[in-house]
Image 1 (spheres, rainbow, N blue to C red):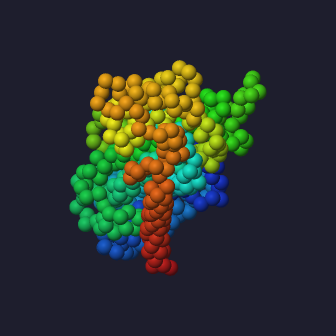
Image 2: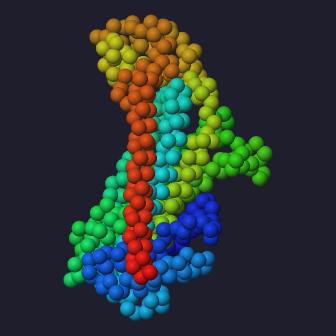
Length: 502
């Protein structure tokens, strides 16, 4: 399947999930919308700057207004290219209206349209990411004291707080949020006024144009604007899409590990589209939501890579990676993944008792024996590690669980481990200390590492994560307010042109 087809499929999937837009809904800020805004801003600025004779004001106002009004009607023409938009202006007001085109090109106009659209899509991505992050942090708060096995290399490794585990993923999503903010700052620059690649002899007010369109600033170099930067933007957005998809896929795979167990400690709540019954095996409840979200994450990853592949080995400024439809579908594929990840987090059923049973059925606490022997009794770690390893090997051979391991056997194994060395032959741990050292709950509670799962660190990290989510929410609202206020100011100033002819 071609990348464009995959992108279209992703866009259709997103539209289906989000709900189709009805004719009465507020028009999307699509290519046609932004071409209209550019024309309105050109009319206002060029009139004020004397680049467009004021005698033209009524004609220009009426022509632009008619094209936009016609496009807002159900089934109205909403062209997405300068060369198909301009004929509608000529039809509405005659060829004189093309005096509005002073110092403009389809190159800088379309580069501006694409930046404006991608900017909006990145804000939608930021909103979806923040919603999922907030759900994850809330769940982490709820499960601060839920002790579960964590896995490395696909094998149960150590006990941990499930809340701490979730905060680890939240930290990854926070980096994705940082990447969005950083990329947004580079996308939020107006190419308008750079024409094709080296500017124009018309003294255009590029900064005022940027302000009307809600951009924070302009692309500084005229060659960069449409030739280099316009290609960078979807590639950078694609890298963020890939990062989000990778985080989602990793999380889902870890949850799905439980579905292979006869008695999982984590499952999806049945119903609501989360699971479905096997058509042949009555006992099976397949994790449909996990499967589909992982599939969507893989598709998002594919689309994110596609932006880079399309930008590879082309001359400056070529069209290949710039298509609005493809890049919108790419970003929205990540939004779809995040929305379903949020559903997964809200649907998870965690059994703390079963998780603790899982921990106590294996030797995930064995490293603590070596740590305590070194920390308290100055036994070199590798010696303590060897002792713990021998305990585990003996226990597994005899099918002995940690809570039932005989203290006398621990003493014997320790003596054999240090035999022939200068270390005292008696195990320095009392039986009570030996037992408490193997307690998963105590291990987590007694961690001292900054950033660990101990209660005081969990409280600190939760507070930090909650503040970052609040800050990101404020940032998103600030950017949206900037854009909407700028466009409102443009509308007001454009309407003043209409008053001139009345």
